[in-house]
Amino acid sequence: MGSRAHAVVLLLLAVVAVPSIALIKELEPGQVWPERGSVKQPSDLIQNVTDTTEDAVPAESELEDAPPEEVLITKAADLTKNDVQKVDYSGAQVWKVPTDKTGVKNIISRLRRRNLLSTWGGNQTYIDVLVKSNAITNVTRIMKRENITYHVVIDDLQKRIDEENPPLDQNELELQDRRGHRMTWKQYHRLADIHGFMDYLAKTYPSIVSVQSIGKSFEGRDLKMLRISNGKAGNKAVFIDGGIHAREWISPATVTYFINQFAENFDVESEDIKNIDWYFVPVLNPDGYEYTHMADRLWRKNRKPGVVGRACYGTDLNRNFGYRWGGKGASNNPCSEIYRGSRAFSEPETKAVSNFIKNIASNFTAYLTYHSYGQYLLYPWGYDNVVPPDYEQLNLVGNNIAQAIQQTGGSQYSVGSSSGLLYPAAGGSDDWAKAQGIKYTYTIELSDTGKYGFILPTSYIEPVARENLAGLRVLANVVHKG
Ligand SMILES: *[C@@H]1O[C@H](CO)[C@@H](O)[C@H](O)[C@H]1NC(C)=O
Ligand SMILES: *[C@@H]1O[C@H](CO)[C@@H](O)[C@H](O)[C@H]1NC(C)=O
Ligand SMILES: *[C@@H]1O[C@H](CO)[C@@H](O)[C@H](O)[C@H]1NC(C)=O
Ligand SMILES: *[C@@H]1O[C@H](CO)[C@@H](O)[C@H](O)[C@H]1NC(C)=O
Ligand SMILES: *[C@@H]1O[C@H](CO)[C@@H](O)[C@H](O)[C@H]1NC(C)=O
Ligand SMILES: [Zn+2]
Image (cartoon, rainbow, N blue to C red; front, side, top):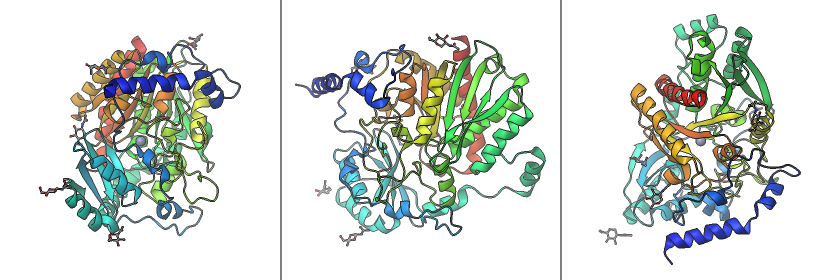
């Protein structure tokens, strides 16, 4: 039996073995789920299955047998104290490693299990890894021995972090005082500035802008959502979030840029923009976001403690959504960077989004979630290498968005299904949104392609946001006309 046929059989078996009813009960006791019946279940949707037995490296499920070794990083943080000890990345490096040679992925996984490196971004042929400073000698030796080529992209990570987000100059500070809010797109701002900006817009443009909290984070911060709408009945609705992953600072910066553009220029905006109800949650993981500013620049997850008595913190919110939760590319180890949580929607942040989207009267036509990095426009499914029945449309619209981005700012975005282009990752917000019947569902991995990775200098904010605004206009056109 060929490996493809083998995989098909395995997948079909898996589908048969897990009756959807049981899954539904487990996810949402007492509720009919999913509520909107317009999306077929994946068993109907298998159009292509490729052999995913050798997962792309970021499938950290091998980590499951690993001891809680990220303790060093996770323990550092009691934000209530003033003397927060910042995690220091002096001497740490980021390497780009081609993974097409057989065995490379396994070696990387093994090094990660030994806590010598962690993975950043990657696709099916390359991976970026962060090599800890005390591990560089050993990892270099191992790579040499195994004949694995790589090149050093960042040779002192802490230096990059120190240079990434300089204070605003005097001019900007004066402007800030006059504007009524502190938000700029020349700096990565703290949560208070972002929330203050949202409140300012609601106060200044009450006829079109409103702000509400859709819930609280684990540590009690508001999950603030801003709505922009001309109030016309029959408007289509679009939901946009940012900051699911704490360290991806370009994401909240980009989403707030959209908000600023639409709110401040609503009267002269296009008919497409004006006749859509926009819902923005620019920082969906506020605890993690603040933590990246105060304690560990490279924190990814939320800040809920894992199993009681264990030292590891945080759930990967983008593995915690309740569609095919717990599948490939998600870990059950609370110390893993891709820890899926104790059950679907175990985290207040993901639960808030799901409650909001399910209970609201409007029907969302699009769901966009902004991440970094890699420059990808990804559509479902993420849980495995299968695509929904309307994938050709998603691909076409994705390509049109990518084209607009490229024509505006020059950046090239690759378009494809997230599992197909990158690697399987179950429990993502995009899969869940698609399963709710939201047609145009995309995960957008913003700039760059690895030169700076997560530590993208502030001079990139405006160009990245501007070209992505052009992409968003393409989507708005499709939503409005469609
Ligand atoms: C399915 O697989 C075939 C053969 O590998 C390929 O030509 C085709 O483009 C694939 N379709 C999708 C939707 O990936
Ligand atoms: C994968 O990453 C490498 C290195 O960043 C890049 O050159 C290549 O184009 C990427 N592949 C895809 C399909 O995006
Ligand atoms: C590097 O390798 C040496 C020799 O095998 C070992 O003693 C040392 O603990 C290793 N260092 C790290 C950081 O793993
Ligand atoms: C690495 O390359 C050298 C020289 O080409 C060869 O002798 C050695 O066996 C290779 N090692 C591995 C692990 O492939
Ligand atoms: C949303 O969709 C449902 C089912 O398709 C429909 O009954 C309802 O009227 C729609 N609501 C709005 C506000 O368009
Ligand atoms: Zn992300």
